[in-house]
Structure formats: structure tokens, C-alpha cells
Length: 441
Ligand code: LLP
Image (cartoon, rainbow, N blue to C red; front, side):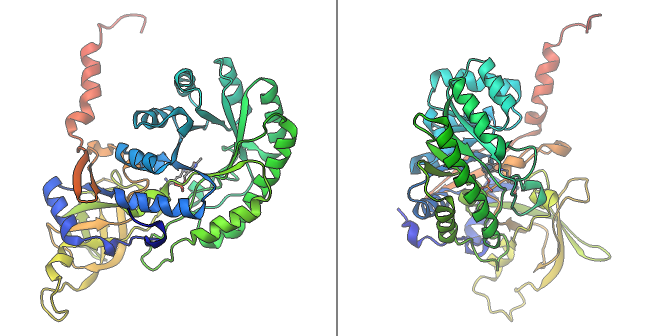
């Protein structure tokens, strides 16, 4: 067991063993996600050490692979679920109802139906509602279980406008309405257990002031809610996730201790437990995406290195202009131990690494200096453990990649590669069941 205090705060792409990754690419083919469970555990323990008194939930939207959920459950994490599907996966991975917090964002009826059904068997689960309407829709279904209110604190932070939620009208009940809403919910016999907010994702150390202000508002609100609802008062105050990770090689890791200290100070005296729910922080640097070089083309303005992964495999660069480190494993293995003056050393040249999807946004980097690529090389894209596979799609009828898990000395295929057959199966099944055309379609 690795001691949290000594596990490095970040694992860089250069820390991965190039020969081992190349041999995985060889055996399981590319594109391939590789995830190291021991690193996931290390990341969890670092958060646990920084927030020793807090309840720690894993936001499984970052990576819902069953092996990840089981590993984090064993470490003691609860699970923050963004949909009924995620809640189902959490329970299937062995979570108890008490571990499950379902955060309902404009929840479809079938999500609420599923959750209320699941509540009958798991009365300890918690539903976090972000609107009064959602509370009424729960009541309509007979739900009066554990209720947490997501509030909109009016402060957003994060790595990109598309992931700053704290001030976006879509999320949460305006904080100034929270006391009234929770008084009302208490009168309607809900078991009001918490308040919740999430300012955004990928929050960095330089956004600590915003974090502090946000947490102070949550502390104030908790004290007002406690005074208003009576009874046992609030059980927890959940300040969301969003802990950033360094995607650039020269970026400093987040100072978790400072974040924890700022959180404790800013929240003040509350008669409730603090809860945090990071996703990215646990899994980002535990994962890499391996991709093979198909084509090397000298274009007018750059060299295009065509690879077999694309925006359908890892969407973040196309969606958020996100930076991910890229390493040519083959070049590294070939030149390992070779003198830098040797002809085998490949000179870096500016390259645009592009996927096979018919969209100009389907590039992982533009004009980045990388060792000259050759057809057949294997590249590793770093920090791909969070929001990688989860955001993958089958666009262009590209089956999603396989996922391999490393666990100590063990290596196993955790999820097989999809096939085109998988992509078309639903269509085929549907067609065989369709009856004759009728007039009342
Ligand atoms: N809690 C709630 C209610 C959330 O909505 C999220 C993320 C989290 C916790 C976890 O945030 P994290 O610790 O992972 O930053 N696809 C984007 C990120 C979207 C995050 C959405 N919500 C990306 O790849 O950067």
C-alpha cells in the first residue's frame, strides 16, 4: 500500500514506461485506453489525507469503468451520480444506497422513475435536486427520502466557459431562495440532509480566491438553513468537485493542502460534515490513450501525423481546445540508452496530430514539436483518464476503443473494443421486430 503522503502529486506522461505501453498497444491494438488503478488509489488517498474529516464522493462521470468504481469504493469513496444510469452502475459496482448521491439536473422522467424505484430497495440514497420543480416531481412519485438541495452560488470557476457551472442559471436553485425551498421541503416531510453546489471543473490554484468566496457563501447558507429547518439540521454541506490537474508538462500541480485549508477556514463553524466530490483529480493522470500513426504527410504549412484515435475517442481537445501531452513511445523506446548524437535519435519537428474523423476540429495538437513520426509508431496521449472514454462516441461509425487496466502486477482487458456490429446491432434488432406498416402510425 502506497503512503498518501509520499505519492507524487502528479504522474507525468514521461513517468510511464514507454516499452510497457508499447507492448500493450501491440497486444490489444490501438486506439487503447490504459488505466492504472494503483494511481487512482494514490490520488484518492491524497485527497483523503488533505480532507480527513470530509465525506469524499467520486463524481463518476469522469470515468465510470466498473474497475475504477470498485477500487474507489474499497478506498471508502461515496459516488456522485449524474444520471439514473450512473446510479445503476454505482449499485452494480457494489455501492450501498448510502454511498449514492444522485444529482438531478433537469432529470428526465425515466431517471426519476428509476431512482424512486431504487429508493424502495435502498432507502439511504440521497437525491440532490436543483430546482423546486424537481422536488415536486419527486413528491408526485411518492418520494420523501433524503433530499439535498443544489444551490446556485453565483460564482463560477474552471478551465473553460463550458464547464463553469456555479453562476450558470441552468444549475441549482438561486442561493437566496434556498431557505424557503428547504423549509417547504421539510414541511412536505422530505428528509432534508444537505446543501450542495459545484462551481465548475478544472479549478486551478490561481482561482483559490473564488473558491474561498464560494465556500464562505455555502457556510453562511448552511447556518441559515440549519436555523430554519429545525430537527437534526443539515448532515452535510457538499462543495462539489473541480480540483484541477496539470495538463501541461511544466504546470505545477494543485496545492491540495491549501485548497483544503482555505475550504475549512472559509466555511466557518457549521454543525454538519463537509463533503467534496472530485472526479477528474482521481483518474486524469491514471490514464493514457495509446494511438497508432497511420499516415505522415508533409502539408504546405505543417507535417500532419494521422493517428487512429480521434475526437470520437478523446473529445476534450476538439470541445474545449484542451491541451494534452503527447509522447512518441516508439521513438523513445528506439532511442532509449542511445547517445543523443546518434542517427537513431529523431529530431523534433512541428506536427499536427490529427484523427480520422471528417472534421477540421479533429486534431489533438497543432504545430507541436514532437520527434519526427513514422508510420507504425505508437503515440501516448497523457492525462486521458478523466472525461476520455466517457465522452467517446460512435460518430463516423467508429467503434469505441478498448480499455486495459493495470493493477499492481496484473494487466487485464477491462472493456473490449467495440465492433461495427456493436454499432449497428440496435438497428438490426429493431428492424427484425418491426411489424407491417399500418395506417395509424
Ligand atoms: N460534481 C458535479 C455536480 C459536477 O457536475 C462535476 C463535473 C463534478 C462534481 C466533478 O468535477 P471534476 O472534479 O471532475 O472537475 N467534460 C469536462 C468536465 C465536465 C465536468 C462536469 N461536471 C472536461 O473534460 O473538462
